[in-house]
Image 1 (cartoon, rainbow, N blue to C red):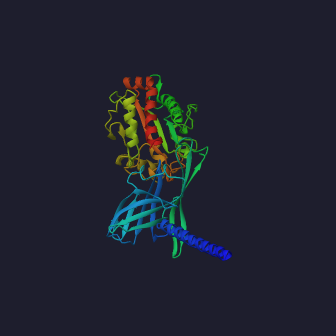
Image 2 (cartoon, rainbow, N blue to C red):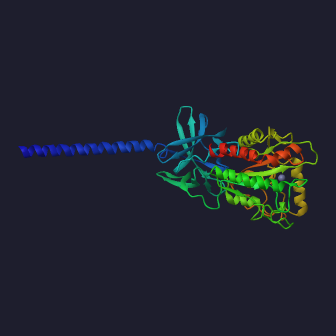
Image 3 (cartoon, rainbow, N blue to C red):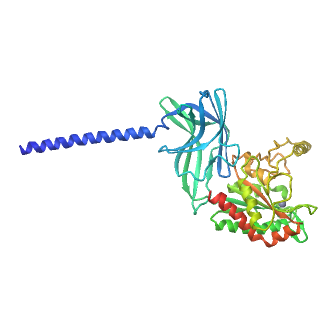
Length: 443
Ligand SMILES: [Zn+2]
C-alpha cells in the first residue's frame, strides 16, 4: 500500500509538472505573439524614400506611399520600433493626393528625427498610419535615392559616444520580402578623425579680412577661436579648428580665400571632421561708420533657435548690442543671407564666360560658403570642381551635413564694437559656450 501511494504521488507530480510546462509555454508564445504585433504585421505596400539626410543632429526623411486607402487617414507618424516593440514616435508633415501620400519628417532641415537620444540596440523605422476607426497600419520604406547609407556619431556626453548606422535592409516574410530602415546603435570610441564641433576662424594666411589701424580680423578671430575651443573642451566636447594661426601669409598660402576647398582647405577640414556643428567666427567691416553690433548668420530653411540663443546670450553677456543692420535680418541679431536673383544671373554669366556650366543656385541657397558648403547637398553646396579657380568641395554631395552658423562679433571700425571685442573676449566666449551647452549638450 505504501509503495502504491508513493507511485500515485509521483504520477500526480509528473502530471502537474507537464501542465505547468504547457501553461508556461502557452503564456510565452502568447506574450511573444503580442509583442510581435508590429513586426509580424507590416503592410506589404512599401513607401519610397525620395530623400534622406542628416543635418546637425537630426535625420530628415521624405517618402511617398502609393496605392493605399487614404480617405479615412487620421494621422501619420514616423515610428522607431525596437526588438521588444517599444515605440518612439515622431510627427510628420503629409499631403494626400488620391491614393498616394507624401510624408516628410519636417520642413526644416535641422528638425526631424533627433538622433542623439536613441538607445543602444536595433531599431526599425516605419510609417505608422492611424485611421479614423483607430486601426493602425505600419509601412516600411525602401531607398529610392542614390544616397549611401548613413554612419552617424553622437556628440560626446560624459566621455561617451554612440555610433548609429542607418541602413536599408531586407526582411523575409511568408508572402514576400520587405525592405525597411534599420538603425544599429552601439556605444563606441569616437574615431580620432571625428569631432563634435568645428570652429572656423575666418580668413587667415594672405587674407587678413577686415582691417582697422593695427587690428586685423584674421588675428582677432584666431584668438577668439583658440579660447572658444578651450571653453567647449571644458564642457566635454571634442573640437577641431580649421586653421591654427601658423599658416603661410604669402600669396601662395593654401588658406588664401580662393583655395578654401582644397584638401586642407577649411570646408574639407569641417567635412572630414564630421562635426555636428560648425561655428565660423568673423569681424564685420564697412567703409562708413553707420552700423554696429553682433550678427548671427544661420542656414535657410532651418529652425533659428540656436542662432537666436547665440545672439541673445552674446548681447546679454558681452555688453554689445544686436546689429543695426536691416538687410537679411530675420529677428534681433539673426540673419539669413541667400542668393538674390541678380547674384544668380551674375554667377551664371561668369560661369559661361569662363567656359563651364553654371552652378545650380536658387534664391534659398545660402550665400555664405561656410554655411552652404559644409551642409553638403542639404544646403545646396555646389563647389564641385567645375570652376578650376575654386578647387573642389569633397563633401558637396554628402547627405550628412554640418549645421553651421557664422558669428560676426561686431564692426571693426565702430569704436564701441572694437573696444568690446578687444576687452570683452571672455564674455563673448562664455555667451557662445552657454548656447552650445543649452542647445547641444543638454537638449
Ligand atoms: Zn570676415
